Length: 495
Ligand code: BES
Ligand code: MN
Ligand code: ZN
Image (cartoon, rainbow, N blue to C red):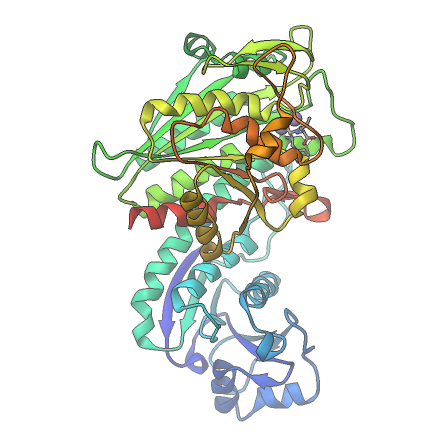
């Protein structure tokens, strides 16, 4: 998708479709008024007949509006003016994109970015619009034998701002939005691919290919390298699989040569059967999404390289399947981590923390200024926060605040969960240093506690994205979260 920013006369746009907003089903926005005036109150006439539902996200497509050079005018319901907030703005944009797709327009001018929004500036509105329109245009049909017949696809979108003076600011935000949207689409593609295609080796190839195109150094460590490093826990999970594990290491050098990097560590379980502690059959297909943490690392690194952020960032991805089999780990097995601590594996389905703990020890070698891991770690976080907020845990309050604020700015929000010592009590083993599971109560907290045993050397945060990385049901698919949050976090770090 190609974007541009423009100010001035919506009524003079020569394009496939001009999109304007209407509050409450009758109050015209400023851009809608301009079109109404030029068309001798054609819009007012249509609205008087009650054809546009007053609801937020309702749409009405008009053809051949008198005196207007655009082929079409799309009216979008904005709901009540005083309720018009961030969520409403995004809903309106999503509805507009959906309606645009069902027209034959290949170009459109969207005059929703010129609406006033409390607490949000032009930059925010433009970035969000680029992301929402790109998301609306996203399709994953590469596994279909015939791509579904498409109408002429929307190719060019102009975003309208109220004043000339907003164009420069808008263009910067547009570029950031595009980098984030591209990173999200990359993460979604990887997440949506089935596990027979998206194996650890495939993830490694994709990382290498993305790295080559974006000037990021990528190294892939093989089974024997992982053995040499002593990553006993990571290897324990990989034992049950025919697919060899990969440790993918990416280095983006945008900052000074010796400036300490930020490290992103992503869970890359390309399929989680649960192993010997096997999962029930229902919805097990969704465990192909268990590498969405890894995908978000790759998507974020692509985005920041596209933005040319002046910052050093390292990405580390332990990638493997979690399978049952004759060689698989068994409940009760005890393995030694790279850190030297021993772990009693009481449940082979708590495998994410087993691969992450070794990766978290590995990143110490980069002397990172901060480490953030991203993982579809626990079903318990879905119970706690649903599909809205990502769970955030941290051993550093300033780092937690940075990430929370980045999530607010990106509208890809997280919620701070406790990591108090009281919860560490749950991690007691009769036979090893620690068990890989704690109590069922507070399951996402005890999982984070397990990780915290390996992150004492640096400020660290953990994002549990089990509820936010993908959608189930009719809209099943990866969301690309939390690429936007992480990108904003790094943008702020680079500033
Ligand atoms: N990948 C799952 C977490 C998950 C489960 C995400 C369901 C989304 C939906 C993880 O590896 C896992 O299986 N966690 C277990 C941990 C338990 C055995 C302590 C869980 O959450 O049930
Ligand atoms: Mn599991
Ligand atoms: Zn898992």
